[in-house]
Length: 166
Image 1 (tube, rainbow, N blue to C red):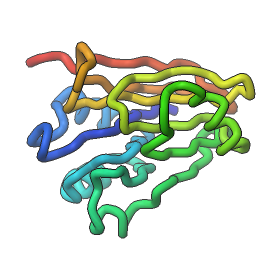
Image 2: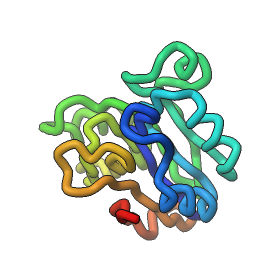
Image 3: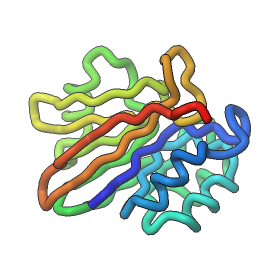
């Protein structure tokens, strides 16, 4: 199964639309996971219409309309793996231990908020993934997103991708 991980799209504040590179990934993915901070509900509509399957939550910059349509925390089982999708996880220091305690029955935690790509594994085996942002790099050298290939019960390949300038 091919997954596309996104977060912090901040449209239209940081970009008018998702980059073409991301839309191509949407078309190739079995599931799109978005960890919040959409800002504009139209982006949710567009992504939902174009995705084969969308799993998503709201973020701190998302208003009442998005919060009415999305959960604060989304949970789904894909290819035998339990995924939890949240926006905020708090400070980077101690994140793995805190999240492992907060989500003991999760295999993969997808989060956003910082715009900083993150890929670590807690001592419990919980995998923590933050795809960064495809539209707002902040202090990062590039805007980013992630793709994940799964096989039954395992992550087979996790890749961070840079948004290439066109």
